[in-house]
Length: 140
Image 1 (tube, rainbow, N blue to C red):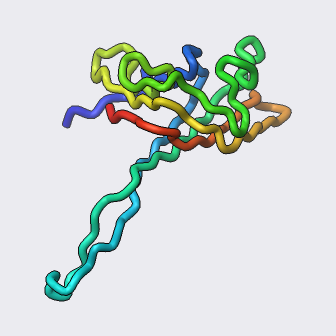
Image 2: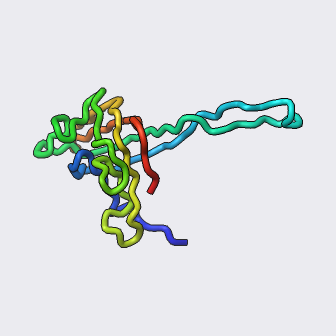
């Protein structure tokens, strides 16, 4: 098996490398029911609109100021330059070194839905955001 560690993963938003701890991308489609009389009693579906949900846990770095522009991680903000692939400004790398795998997710834009900050006296300040794709995205 050619598994590899996530230790070289990266989140890059509007050209800023985030101090991310974890990210999750969930892609989905609407299942459109096209069941008909000719299906011999079996359901039939076609894929509809493609969608993606994104979540990311990060360390809050006061020198980076993630809630200001860039990267402007606040609810209702649109991040991205409208491009996917290498020219995209919103990327989630599987291996930023390219040694194990050079692939990355890219989004033309992400709509920030929620931002949550978590603080504790014996810990570091972290924040989590959730987002949805706004337009095209590309798989690694």
